[in-house]
Image (cartoon, rainbow, N blue to C red):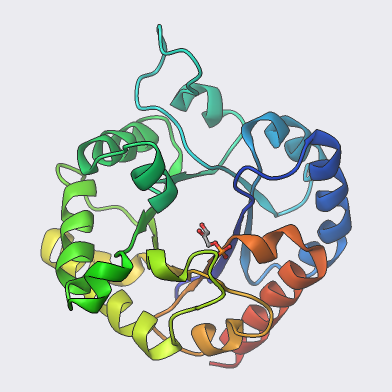
Length: 254
Ligand code: 13P
């Protein structure tokens, strides 16, 4: 059985005081829902304060990005050892990083390797653009992103993959549960080709893109979908708690 995960990617939102207020608002409810792995990914500057607030709780902390070098003259970057004391998870290869900041498959591959070297669990994001989706290239794009990101990486169950179709991110136009499940099956079989069938069954694969309390049930009811990477709705304490609550109840019944 794969433990479901709901991760909140706050992106470039919340000042420090707002982050603290948001964690305080959601924590009591999140603490009650420990059959789901709950991960908060606030901006870098709020990681330390969030870590303090979740001390003694089973809620986990994740970063939204990192560089792959461990130190040096890389102005503005954050390194794996800076995060390894603070975080369990790190989001890598988010489409916003790929599209807006020029991250290539090679860089994502270096970051995945660096994460493992420093004991961080990657939440590896893949997903196709609208144009690729409309020209039936989803499978080819997503499989090639997975192969590139995992090139030279040994099989591990410490990987989380998030399938986030770019056209569904922040648009209010989520994929359907069936669409997401089909692509997630393809991702799992691509990992099976690289690592073997049994390791591929241990990997948790999430859906992301306009997930809310109103549509989470559709995704989480699919046996192939192990959780969600939530953007906008993770900034609302009630909505995020509702997503986790529904995930706990649907996955425990299946
Ligand atoms: P939204 O939930 O705001 O669509 O964002 C999804 C996402 O990109 C999470 O990483």
